[in-house]
Amino acid sequence: EERGERSRTILKVCAPTRAVTMVKYAREPANPTKSAKARGSDLRVHFKNTRESAMAIKKMGLYQAKQYLEDVLEHKRVIVFRRFCGGVGRTAQAKNEGSTNGQGRWPKKSVKVLLDLLTNAESNAEVKGLDIDNLYVSHIQVNQAQKGRRRTYRAHGRINAYMSCPCHVELTLSEKEAPVAAQDKPAPKLTKKQLALVKA
Image 1 (cartoon, one colour):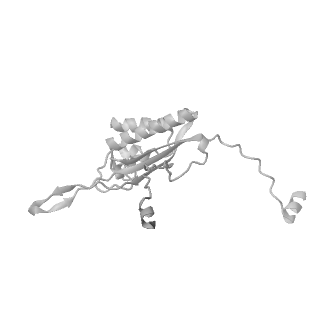
Image 2: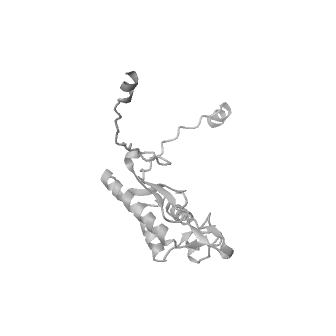
C-alpha cells in the first residue's frame, strides 16, 4: 500500500521563468544621475576596426564625435590605427589626427555601429533630462565576443577555419562638470631664521 501511495504523487510541471538581470557595465559612471549609457552585444563588426574607431572618439563631446564619424564615412577624416596596425596602409589624413605612424583607414561598418550607439545613448540622456549640449564620451570600451565559426576549402582536399571576430561595445555619456574655483592658499609657515630676516 505504501508503494502505491508513493506512485500516485502528482508531478507539477512549472513553466520556466526567465529571470531578468541587469546588464553589468565594465565601469560605472562617477555620477550616475548625470550620465547615460548604451551597449551592443555580439555585434557583427570586426573587433580590431571597432576598437580603433572607439578610441578615436573617447573623451570627445557628443556632437564632435558624431560629426567626426560622419566625416569618416565621407572620407573627409580618417580613423588612426595605433594598436592593430599591422599591414595597414598610410594616408596623409592620418597626420591631421595626430598619428605618429601615418596609418589609418575608414572602417564604414564599425563607424555606423558607433554612430547608432551614440544616437541610442543620446536618446537615453534625453529621457533622463540631461543637457545634451554638455555631454561627452566619458567611457567607451570594446571587447571581443565569441567567434563565429565557418569553414573554407583549400587545395588538396583540406579545410581551414574561417572565423568572424564580432565584439561587444559599451559607452557612457556624461555631463561636463563646471570647473571648481581654486581656494586661496594659506600663507606658507616661516621658519625662525626666515622670520628674523623679515623683521630685519
